[in-house]
Image (tube, rainbow, N blue to C red):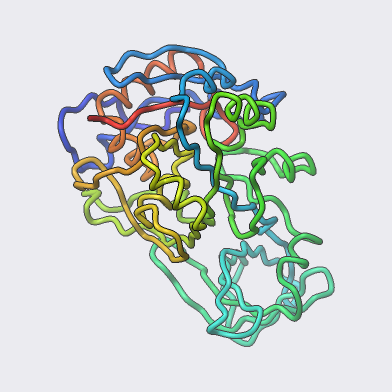
Length: 353
């Protein structure tokens, strides 16, 4: 399967989505996690542009001894649920985020049904009736509704929900995904997609990092559905990012301000740090970082998975490490048969000077 039109080699800022594309055989899209979390491969993109192939445990010796590694401790919720209308018609709801201003226990969802839902309708989910309170449509989210649930929403999802695996994983979720699509840092429920760079980490690797003087800390950024939304504008500067909620603790802010090298474990941790400028507090961000956006990074090093062609996450990595170098590394990864996307392999990149 060819996911893109052509390979790109570019110089300087470019603003067409097609300038961030690469040819990817379908069989390189990982459908299953690695047999062991730390058994994935690691591509190291050095600052001058050369690449080396390794395995993820190599990361311990590739980071500065006094670094601060920042992980995202969001927890993926089993957000996908199946229900039916009073008429018997099937409804699929993907719970995205709370909407407390609408009603108690109200959540915004994406809804799939043969006929669109209407305000006042109820959807029965395993004996629980949820009511449609509001129809809303945000950019790229057709069928967005707000529903009110009697009782604890997260408890309902834990009981009947499915892990919201990305669409490019062509299988139903399994019980094992409740563990493997969750990082070792997962603590605060609210994400509908995993911060996938963290999927490679294990307690043993974390202990080896601490033994080298690397401090581990966390931020929270609840990864939203917009992570998978394509750019529809012809010029990426016209794209509006989805908004995601984040929280930075005083302890993490102090480490970030310490002057030590900062390593983001994943693009979501990086977005939280860059949006907050490393300051403690809570908020939400629609920050879109792309080559030519003029953003000045506070993060020094980034551990990340391989991202979709023409995606905002690939553009962020290009802005961080250099478009030409990153796309060349992706072409190397394809030739070397790395595994791509959420359950795929990892890469380490460094901030371009």
